[in-house]
Length: 354
Length: 253
Image (cartoon, rainbow over the protein chains, first blue to last red):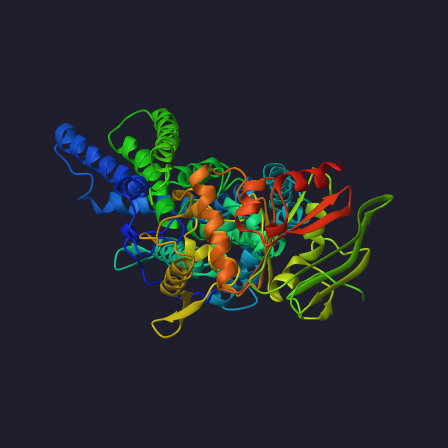
């Protein structure tokens, strides 16, 4: 029942289904609530643009370098956040993603370094990336086993894995960063195609596949059902345990991909690569409109959420504000998002009159 | 066997001398019932009388300890609710087994979603088919929905009950078992559910429902079976009994 990982139909954001809203006849409020992350992103970008024009007589958006920097900055949190979106919709959370990412980064650096003298550069990279992503699936599988079969609450199970992955990653790295020299790898990490960085292209394709998986397949549909009413899903004959196992493996693989792209970008693997990203990725999902209670959320919303964070962080540097304001701004945005979510629920949660 | 209740020749579903014990506790003892096509049977009894145990035994949740279950005259034994459902026995629980964030169509097809090929190769959920089937099924229950794209959380309790019933109808359930279908509903909604049961009856399906509400039972049931402490206290045709007699059977007067 897994999906065919190929291109998506790239639906416009206006019909992003939180569940099954393809026919698109929802109330205006529901639509606005769904789009709020994109509206917010637009407002934010306009604000920085205005600021740049007034304060420096420059431009924020018109500057290709800015756009590239924001996109590159958003890559890792976005990759983690796509996996986290699935997990949060199912009613869980994955706290271990940041260090699974670090683990994958270290493994990728080691394997590419080991394979470098044995084969040509592209093959060494391919092998390294493959092994690292697969290794990242292992802690994911353990998470899934704990949550699905041993009934460990996701918060606790993945918190345990947070520690285990962190320790293993640092042990493998010998407590330091693992440098790796491979021309193909750094070309992948820093090269561009028509001005668009390769890491951004890889991420964009991956995000489209994940969008397809969530919105158009049984796996995605069951994910929404389990998050809303696991009992109902079980009675409908859905294999909940198998689903959760696959779900956490998927989440591990997302972290693995983020890790190998980190190694490609910096030509080094570091155990702490994803440490600051864990909360960013949860924040991106929440800003993107998912509910931490499960049952709602979209990949397109998460994309907007990740960019909101990236734009705030980069934009504040751009307009020369002390970096500590980033934390405050992102924190405020998270709280506002949750407040909007609650308000929307109380407005549109009412019954339709027959 | 010597089952002589006045039901049609080959009942849809027949339960003979069913027993169920949990360890030393005998929850059901020698209970028999049968239900024909287009028949509505009510199960009544005080709390702990064994009503829920009985329907769970019929629907495959509990394996029975003794006795037989016959479907179309053939003995069956369900290892899981899924098996019972595959054979056309659908249970609708009082807490409404719906995913509130999904549409009516997605709920009807939950776990068995139809797929189509987009662009000739990419398998995607066939939402149009789901919406279409949902519209037709709900119309069959005389429940006309204008918004097939709305999540079921937008609908009222009675409407959601109708969705749960619609799912059973779509998948060709021949026997519907309902546990307190009118509990937790307002009066107009209760009427709606009663009329839904009438529809199911008219379609030739068998309905077994548990209720505490004698008015509901007398409004829609053909027969009533009263359980008391795990045994059958009595079975009556609704046309031949009164509220007082049923209450007497329930409390054991």
